[in-house]
Image 1 (cartoon, one colour):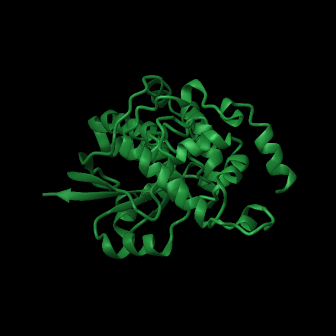
Image 2 (image 1 turned 135 degrees about the horizontal axis):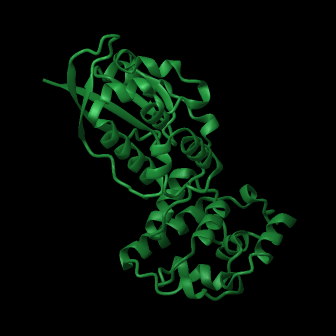
Length: 294
């Protein structure tokens, strides 16, 4: 095993690395079924790994497929006995940090990491890279072919990634925003055109979008890419700065929105039903669909 992995195991510094669970890792309260599912999941991931995939040189003939329990324990910086208990579905509670290290040791993909955290009753860490967020060909087809009503694709922090032709006509002024402010929050709070079109309903809609934003990113609020948009919004919108401190959160529900049609001379008021879709291929994305109501 390479030196870096030895250092990781020796430098972990928690009780789990000494072979005993720490106080927070005892008595998880998770159901027996969940513990068994977690145990089976970890075992199957361990058995699928080849030693050379994690830098372990093949030595003597192995009686079991994949990695040994003690090898996973060392890679993750935990005690072998403790890890064995985890695979035996004992009533212990792995910490978020230990789960993160297990995910790295077992080379889990993002979906597997989320599954492992869910089985352990923990919120999965968020490692989104907004610099790589873009619309995939399948999402583009969904937006432009499958959805005929106005639809807007939002990224992890509500950046506007794409709109279909119907939304382009409805929210035409969003194109005038600078690239660094191409964001749904900024559009709602800072666009004079949106304030005018939403009329007396602007505050209700703005507060709702803010509460949905906070709920969506509650696990990422200390990430630089979230702090960046929050600080920008605080600086440019007094209302955002005030309401952000109220800590309102809410899920994405179907809501009715009244707005004036886009026009130089304020057109008639129309009502929309806004629905939020979550694409399976990019679970942190959102598609806002605005269906006109008669």
